[in-house]
Length: 358
Image 1 (cartoon, rainbow, N blue to C red):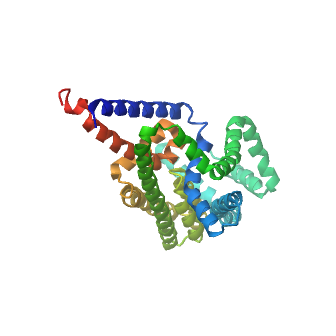
Image 2: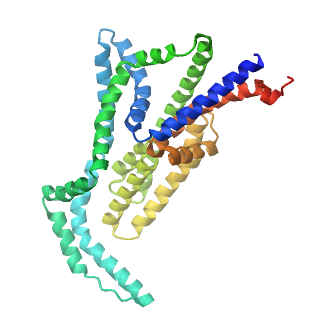
Image 3: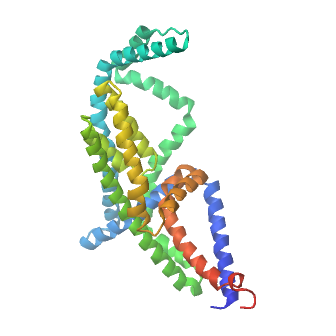
């Protein structure tokens, strides 16, 4: 390839990457539903094609609706794992709360006596207020929630809007996926089509490997957390363990919610420091296994990323683009990896590397 062509392609590639990065940084909050729907559409589109091929007489739009419905049911199924946790733990909280508060008060009084602090805790009043609140009707629980939503209306409205917008955007992306792809291809110059097709095929292969690896990680962690919590004797080990394992597809948030549920259930069941030890051991070991073995091996190695690159991608993109960056960190890293390989080849062929006389 002539040197001047390699230089031109290298410059254009870097320019496009800079423009895309700036757009993501500026429009990050707005792109949340589109980023989530885009990732889901890419993952579900092959299922739509398989269903349409298996049942040719079924209209394409019906195939899209069925696949999206199954995906939404799967998400709701994961969320429904919380139902037995809440229905069991709320009555148990009413029973255990007085004992827990008495132990907390005794611990705090001993700590204050040790350091000479003078502070009086009205434990009886606190217990009465909490028990009154927990014994109230479910409608009474909604009053402070509604009040808080009024105070933070913009945030609540944004969350609600995203929850409504994601399925809508997902439907249209799945319905017109081939059309969107063809429209993008039309803008690619004809003499770049072979390079573009090669790049997209490589990206598709890498992203497919990422999805397969992520599913394996989720299943492995579901088993790990369920068995680990069961070994400590937690009654709700199965729903909490499975929920935590499946929720790790949302980095940090899924793990954090599972940890809080396990800690909450453990303190109510054991009413001792055994709950803290259980959470520290099981979730600490799970985080280490996921971060340093499962994700690097089953995801990082499949897409050709070094474990350090996986960790760096999560931290860097999360810092730059917030939740959107964390959500798309690994698939974006896979695409960036393919692009960097191409840019590296262009760089090696340019006169910047070979010298002006090459």
